Image 1 (tube, rainbow, N blue to C red):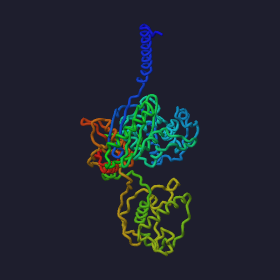
Image 2: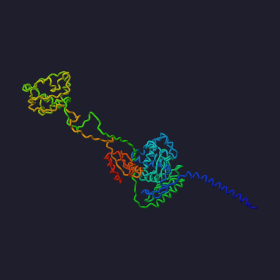
Image 3: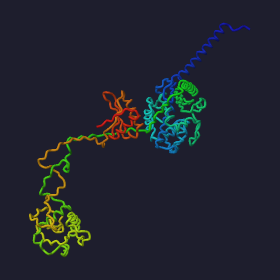
Image 4: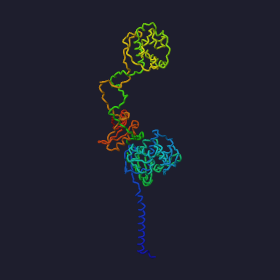
Length: 570
């Protein structure tokens, strides 16, 4: 049998070549979309004991974190538990929004109530999106508010390349992070909440309505010393992982973003951790980060400053400290007081005729006059006043056990006074007025020049002013005008003090320091307002709206933390 001809061989080679070309074209056509949609790769390795960098590749590139977001959701939950905001057995309500989240899911139903401990297990172990959303809504009221709090906490932890839009990590516009920031967050979970960190090493957990398995089980089982932390995957993010492992005295934390598969991601992570253990020193001084003590919501208060160049005109304005001596007015009506009654009685007694002083009749032996009409009320009102007037004179006060003690106006061995002149209305409040009603006022009357009339040989009282001055409304004529003081007040109750943390080159740097300081010193800065002042020398970070005492206390505490601080006053 003859072999194939040369022409047949050439035809066969041509068909093979065309098939190869077609296959390559199909391969490139299939591979091209994969290359276009493939997520960028980033990695970061850190010595967890010191926080120092060991390896970095695109570490500050902002990428989709996917379910690594749940690390911050859990950090916020642990923080709320430690602050006493919630407890592990607190029951959270499942909303329709939370229940509608796409897989991975725990399977929660709208209206269902579930304990926080089960939500934490589902979010940490199974990476359940519905459980993470319920946590955020339960802690902040809505997922949007919770995402804002997550971003605020990220700034406080030094995660400057991170911004959150939800609690579970599903792809959203403006939701991003970096390999460096996720590694920092993994380290903070280990140091800030060691009592809860073991949840990240569980292969399975009871989530209340189901037993869930870990999404990180393969890497935990395959890498020696691995004890966490969290996996993540979306089509836009690729395969992500933040892992922590310990060997001997060394602990390494690393993050991989943009892996092409679970196997590829785990293999790269193993290489990174091996490199970290190889480069990290055996003995090193451990530097633990100071955890934030309290989440602080930024509140804006408006302060209105009122400046007055002249005091307000007020007819009742009284200046007791600077008013001059008042001028007596003849037309002033004196209000009845016990002192006025005493003075009136004394003047009445002094003005009685001398003949009545020699009379043999005494007040103690006289008959009690009958009560006149319409005088009961005045008598009852005047009795305490008369008693007070009698008690002011030691000579006329009855001794203890005296029979006359029941009547305050009884004067033993005194002569019965003669009736007072009709035009003298100051002798007694018991006498009815000309209109037939009790007299409610006492008119001042000049005493008689004869001072021989005395009560039990007591000297005549000194002449008193004819008018009782209640307060001074007008200064004395000719008195120098007082200088007008212009007072400016801001209505803040003395909260016009503050503290300055220094000058910075950028506003972002000043804001970060203010937020970090507010979280660390929440006890002394709870009511203070953070403010960045744009000055010629730079951006000044200030806390304002404080009292002087609060500002000094806060500044002393900050200085103790090795933080530069200056008290600023009004």
